[in-house]
Length: 219
Image (tube, rainbow, N blue to C red; front, side, top):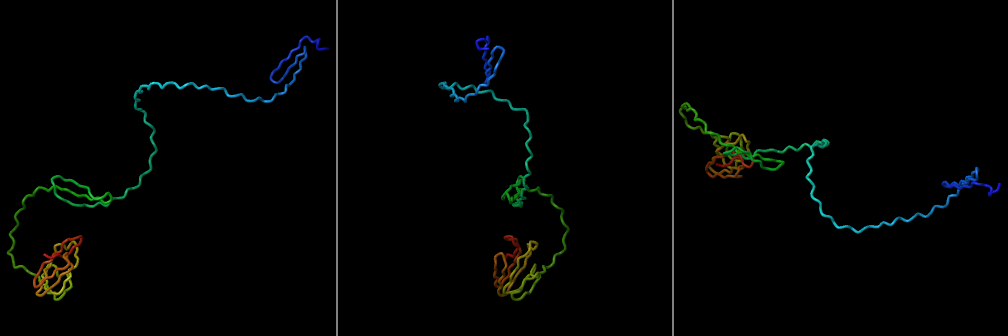
């Protein structure tokens, strides 16, 4: 059979498969794939001119406060324990209105009080008549030359000469006294005045509070 005798001849390509239909006979041939072509160029992007700036829009309406509470944050760490201040009491004076004035520093605060004076109290009842008085008794102590201080000096009239050192006393001794008399000369030391000299005479010495200490001073 020649090609001339074939009535129907058809070609069909599907993908890379070529189908040849010869009458009732068909033949399929796989076509070879060609090489990959060169990538095409990007399209041209044309940017237009910038337009005019538009008018500013009106302010929007104020938003409403939210009525929904936000989530609770995590609990913070405990702070360090603060240092206790050294609190002291300063001046206490009288005034019309009671008040407290804070002074000093943050570490060592000082409280100064203003206290109103109270009303005068009622007069007390008259006391009983006292007994008849008697002559004043004077306690004498003969100490000699440059004696050493003892408790016998307290509330006594001391006769001495040379040098006497009166010691530092206690708070409970405030107001305690001694008289020192000499017929010649005596130097008294350990005083608020440091030293007092007595020449053929007498002088009274009383314990007072001075400069945070309790010492004798001459009167």
